[in-house]
Length: 288
Image (cartoon, rainbow, N blue to C red; front, side, top):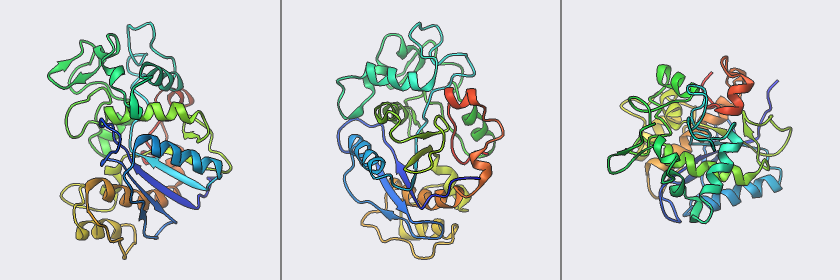
């Protein structure tokens, strides 16, 4: 049996510097085939945290998909930060470490972590700065990211902080938020699926676009493109937006996808997801 959720939200997340982020967008769907609604406001990362805590307090029947990597690679090297004595032993310890090292940095920023003398050795940063332990090629990947690259989309390493496709900055800031949620909003697969209240899952918006049948890339920058994407999920009346930017349209389309994908039992029980991997690296919902 799988839990049936009443509502579905997608949060397109951002790791950029500053308080209000154009890269953060939140859309909510009332179910399969229903047109998602964009919550139009200038979001900050702490505002998203407060929004989630409010839903936790109200026990909202809400599945929340968030676009980030909830942990760093561990399985491939036996540690998040090999050679560093402070390297955590599980994902919750990682979230705590990131938040503690960045204490005092505003807006849930994570710059203090990537500039840390030991942690920086593992990251590729701007200005041609690549740590001596970054790894070969494009860096290290979690198991689920390797599976994603093989059959779904070109997932990137969270240790890479350079380029338009990088997700490292967003993922590190998200870890600060996950630590501060402190279990009040469970996160799959680190936590059991609760009988009531909201639940967070990690998602990858490119999967939603590809499964919608969009051709020529996953970006939707006009009404016609968004209409084509939503049609892939049986939605014929797309929302009218003030601005058709990548983040808003990603959130809308992925909310529609999540409402449909949540009904697939195979996505809640990936073949290679063990208890150990769940505790160390987590998983991207949508990769069976």
